[in-house]
Image 1 (cartoon, one colour):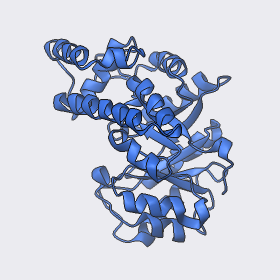
Image 2 (cartoon, one colour):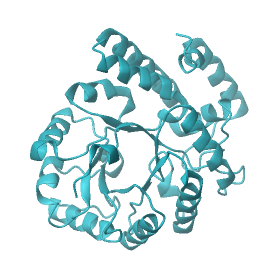
Image 3 (cartoon, rainbow, N blue to C red):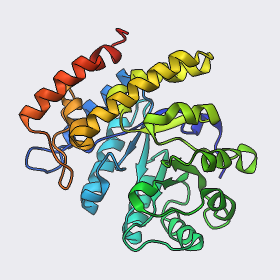
Image 4 (cartoon, rainbow, N blue to C red):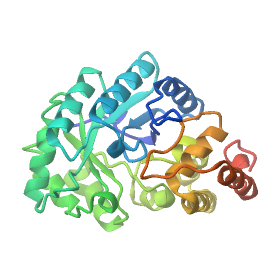
Length: 310
């Protein structure tokens, strides 16, 4: 499947949080507020149910409910919906893919099974093909994230071998710091593939190689930093682009020092979008930790960075 530029994952694609009540149940009423926040911050596409969405901590029915709610909220807006459907259970993943197609998702993505891992490229392609076949009219991205799946198979070879078995394949969500492999994927088949980048803290490196889009968790709360980064790069102002990337690094390092998921969700609440706690095994910040994080974010300059007072 060949995608026109207008349908590719260019610009910023926010990997959204899954909102929970204090008791840990889904709080789908917050999705509308999340969508409004994305539009306000000029983020045109959401990637739901991925790593940031704590997909492996959701039940099958919760994932269906999350996709259903997002599809209702984005309907009639300019927001595009990409649904992550990957699972260790391929039949669940296939069913989620079929639902995403029925809901009119712009695309689906799936990471590799990671408990019983595909040991060969052929097994990985067969697994991805089974999922994609559930949505035969919807663009499919393989989600490359070896730091979480511990599946490290060559993506240039995947792109070379998979198309006959995955007719809907359009590219990769590339969350892997291997820039050489990323460069190979960008150039494969004369640039046919859409390869959005997936590591916010080194996004400038990917832009230098030719990335045109990125899927990121910190775009939820820090999109202005990355908009400025991309704009600076595009006008050839590398000094300004490097400064924005350095802000990103310091921000992500600070959040990670508290436990990234819990700290990111706490930051969203500070911005008026209460996505709730993080589900175990991810930790949630205590009130004392949240207060300290806010102070450190203020000292860092974060609130000025995202309001343009820089």
